[in-house]
Image 1 (tube, rainbow, N blue to C red):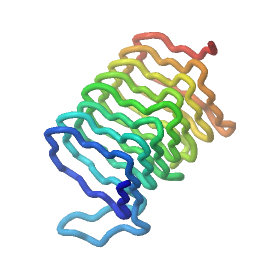
Image 2: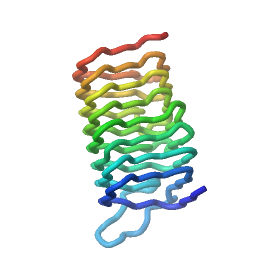
Image 3: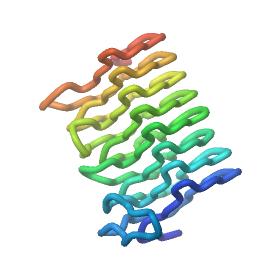
Length: 212
């Protein structure tokens, strides 16, 4: 099993093929690193720092990957992002996965039962396929949002079936969704506020909050 203790820095990297993390443990450093050249990381708690990453094929986390700390893929470009069942993302009280202003040429998908502690940040992202979060378990957001997808463009379906969300909202405010939003069988718990927000969003398909 691969073990990486400390930040993996791939900001601005270009990869022609796939970027695969398989059966690995990634742990963020406890404190920000010192200044390197003109670059300085803004905060501790990032396990994979890859803003502006370009990958010609898929980015995948496979088998039993365990990430303790955030994954920053803001402004990145890739064909797809796949996180297998058996993986876990844990950055409680912070951003677990940052895809702000990223472009994904097909699907973003999490396997059934993937635990995510922290916020999934998709603000301004362009996803030219489905957003598939079926059966994911979301908790411990950075702020009040478990999914922050304000202004995102999702050309396909938003699949939230059987998703469990505890302690925060799923917001797609002003998002453009080319298919349906399906929250069939989802369990959304946020006693302090709203659960699912589609304020000012454009949904070309149906919105389903059903059971069975």
